[in-house]
Length: 121
Image 1 (cartoon, rainbow, N blue to C red):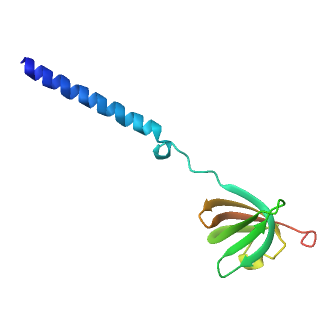
Image 2: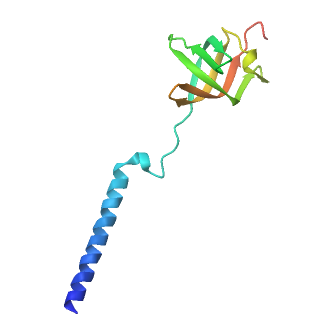
Image 3: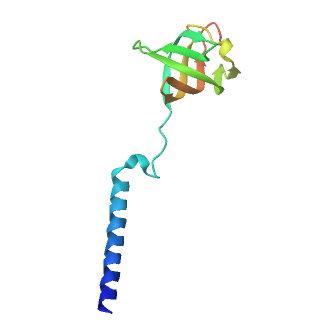
C-alpha cells in the first residue's frame, strides 16, 4: 500500500511539473499565443511615379522621397472622387492614400483613394 501511494505521488508530481513547464513556454513565446491580433494595416501616401499594369504594381514616392511598391489585386478597391475606378485609370503624378498589408515584395493594397486634382473638380 505504501509503495502504491509513493508511485501515485511521483506521477502526480511529474504531471504538475509538466503542466508548469508547458505554461512557462507558452508565456515566453508571444508569437504563438492564441491572443495575438493580426498586424494593423499600413497607410501610405504619395504621388505615383510609375505604373506597371503587367505586374499589377504602382510605385509611389512620399514627401520624404521614400518609394513604396503597391501590389494591386482584383480585390483592391480604387476610388477617385467617390467613384470606383480601375488600375488603367491611374496616371503618373496622381496623389493617393493606400491602405495595405506588408508582404516580402511590397505592400498588398486593400484600398486606394486617389486625391482629385483641381482639373478633376
